[in-house]
Amino acid sequence: MLRPYSIHLVAGARPNFMKVAPVVHALQARQGAAREAGIDLRFSIVHTGQHYDANMSDVFFRELGIPHPDRHLGVGSGSHAEQTARIMVAFEKVVLEDRPDLVVVVGDVNSTVACSLTAKKLGVRVAHVEAGLRSFDMGMPEEINRKLTDAISDLLFVTEESGLRNLRAEGVPGDRVFLVGNVMIDTLHRNVARISAKEFVPSDAVRESCGRGKRYAVLTLHRPSNVDTREALAPIWGAISEVARQLPVLFPVHPRTRGRIAEFGLDDTGFTMIDPIGYLDMLYSVKGAALVLTDSGGLQEETTALGVPCVTIRENTERPVTVEVGTNYLVGTRPEAILAAAREILSGGGKKGKVPPLWDGRAAERIVDVLLAHPPG
Ligand code: UD1
Image (cartoon, rainbow, N blue to C red; front, side, top):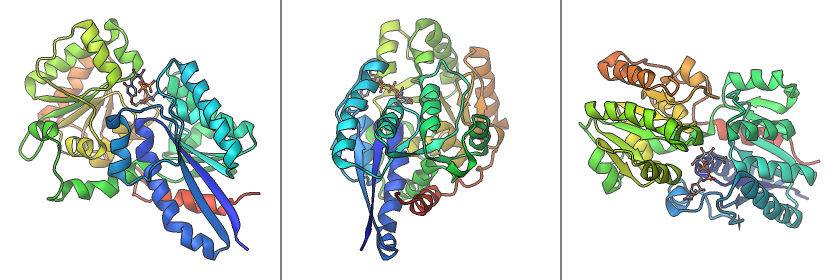
């Protein structure tokens, strides 16, 4: 008699998809062995619909081989309260109907906190992938999401040592916490060979800027604190315009940011502004870049894994290992500091960096080992 073990995997926004993909693949790979051990291991993918544009969502499912979601909540955009509440109401129905044994959430977006809170209140165990990261900046919506999710999770999967320290300091019992490495880097490992292969053809927009022999920078900017006001965005834009005098800047623009640039009437000379791009195009662009400028969380990690210098335009990072061990420069938002780091890197003096422990492409396997060691009830 097989014991059922049903898992719901939640994904909602762009950075979630790269984190869910390797967990899906590791679960698929272990289903046979689990069956032999008497466990009927099943999983469903729940897409909250927080991100919905084809180039913010579908392209990742397609490129990363994530099965079509079993459930799509279709919540869309809104204020934080609206979006979080809509996800909770819709996800509650799913949990009541399906009664999973475990809900796995990833990252730090609104879908993460909304689904963990919903599951926990219905008595369903929660596992959080990418637990323990802290920017210590409660002005950041993601920091609130991280702290709340970790406070109620039953299994916490940590990417770097700082996560262990943070969770210990918050009183999370050690037997719930597992340092497993970084699932985002699992996805990177799996796909880096694909983009190096001859068959891979980047999109026209990317091919025009990147590729063998081309020297360029890649920029991403979407944090509300950096882009939502003219006072914040204009000085950053000015500094990057200076960088753009030295080399072309490829800028896949988040929909939030595109709106602000137009509203503030910023001059985009030297920038190649393109629509958001898929995972493979992004990996291809970043891998060949002389420099990445960003306020993203994931790119700080991906550049460290690839050994590409990264200038992080934020006052803090929840991923300190990328600065301490990797290629990341945390420079804040002052134009002089952004420029100084970019100049140091472009003149050849950038840090070389190392890959943090356990960022080896096998984090999801370790996660599934732990999940199987903690079966239901
Ligand atoms: C969200 C996450 C952030 C993550 C980012 C990656 C939260 C609190 N924030 O921020 O941590 O780094 O995703 O992109 O969860 N929009 C579209 N099409 C889409 C999705 C969004 O046009 O498919 C526009 C809408 O105008 C929307 C705005 O972008 O209001 C913001 O989207 P939202 O998901 O609320 O936040 P992000 O800024 O994307």
